[in-house]
Length: 225
Length: 300
Ligand SMILES: Nc1ncnc2c1ncn2[C@@H]1O[C@H](COP(=O)(O)OP(=O)(O)OP(=O)(O)O)[C@@H](O)[C@H]1O
Ligand SMILES: [Mg+2]
Image 1: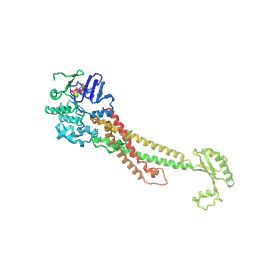
Image 2: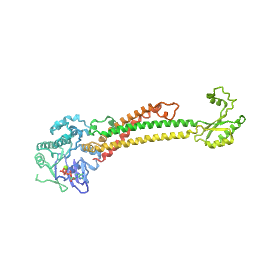
Image 3: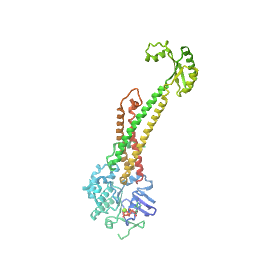
Image 4: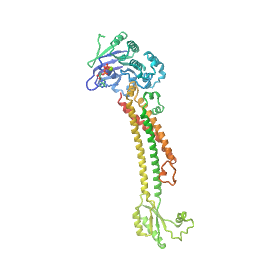
């Protein structure tokens, strides 16, 4: 559903990523690792068009990225759930409205989806925090809320950037279980993470491919995992 | 082109969309104030424009009427000089027609002053000649000189002549008033653009988040456009009402009509300020929309 073909990206002249090729097919599960500053977040941004490739071609749902207009980008993003590293919440809205934001901006009523919202927030352990502002939440709570927001639209693709960075092991496992479940429903999943334990745990549940950014290029991580 | 549906949705609003963009605080009040102040000024400028147009119109209508030539000569000379003066007048460029008044007409003119029983035929009343000018008018000094040569008793009574510069002044004032309205509109565009830009850049992060969760540009722009349009409309409505009230309450001086008492609206003229709030809303709508679309272009 999302395809990168020989994609390069540079912020200011020197390539940060070179000749990256990657296909996120329905039902696929990928992990993305690499040292801090390797370009994991940058690669994810290429996948939801916050950044445009400086070379190569990104294809989203069958359409080349450079042929997708601004409204098209909005529609693509409704089909891609994103857990941002910085969460990207609206600070003046309570948690429940932040989680419901993708529904709101696509013209669906929050009220009609209240049941689902409650369930989802309960599942990530935030039922009691629905009315809290993002600033009143802990880092881990924010990440869980970010995941809830990423899946509320039941997207075809889920891109998660360090979704467990602030979570304890138990909560990380819960989150993984949710992702695995969504994967079994046919959704393509890409998780950028440093958490090798999480990757090992996941490999016992699904057939996940582990990619690593090394020297600007994307490699398949070996059996050391 | 803006679809009707969009305009309707602006008016109806979407409370959730409105909540997504945090309150824009002082820029919103600035817009309210700008709307009110500009509408007030626009109403005054409009009143001035209508009043000067009326004044210029009335004065030029009076100008179009005749001026007169008076023949004051010894009785035996009157007829001869009248003939001579008529000849001169008819050969003067700028004079459309010239006609000696009949005694009955003269009496009618004088009766308001001396009563109907005035014996015109026995009194040495000067013969009057009615002169109707062309729109271009004639050269008064030249005509005076020629009359003096041909009919020494003829006096050109040029009483309407002094109004010409006044009509010109009224016309100019009218132009200034219209230019003011234009300037007021442009100032409003500038003020609202500034206010909207301030709000948009203060909310760059909010806009980024909305885009990331799949909001379309029009959705985000609408939240801003709606605010500024409604604020400008409300402010301008208040300003217009206030301005109209102020003009209605102007002290009612001499109805014979000096210049100042002419300032105001009359009859259907009172409808003229009503489009002002609407115009303010249209200005706010477009200014904010353009500003929002420009700001959005910088955010993927
Ligand atoms: N907007 C930007 N302009 C210029 N350079 C940038 C920008 N964003 C990121 N970079 C640089 O690109 C490199 C890769 O950043 P990126 O965020 O993709 O790394 P990452 O792999 O996600 O790191 P981490 O594991 O710490 O999240 C970094 O060196 C960063 O400084
Ligand atoms: Mg990162």
